[in-house]
Image (tube, rainbow, N blue to C red; front, side, top):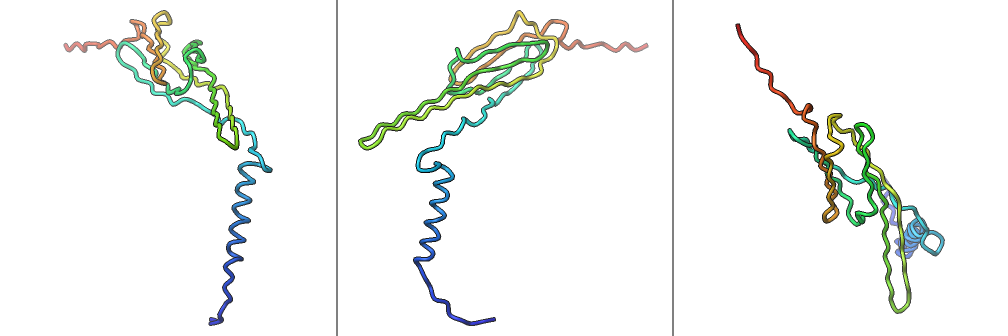
Length: 149
């Protein structure tokens, strides 16, 4: 092993760090201005709960107006579609920034076949969409008594 002394050059390290930071900024913002990137793909988180009488689906769709959400059922598949829009504006003395992003989403779930299509209700409160589907009477579990001889 060598016990040589190395000359310390602090500005070389600072220069290397500056080049690395410049590269990171360039990758993120593009060449001197913010690069326009599409909104990240959005799929709402969904909880499904089945009781004896109904199936309840809760979807988290914060920041989306109820008028921008569509719910449909085809066969035994429940589909939630919508459009997410976002806008941010900042005004300061030396700059004015406006960012807009938007995109659509779709989430499909298989439901029990015995859901009564005439008795489906949807409510929307504080970013949570709740869809309550009543089961058809024949879909409810029926206990079968075992007879002994």
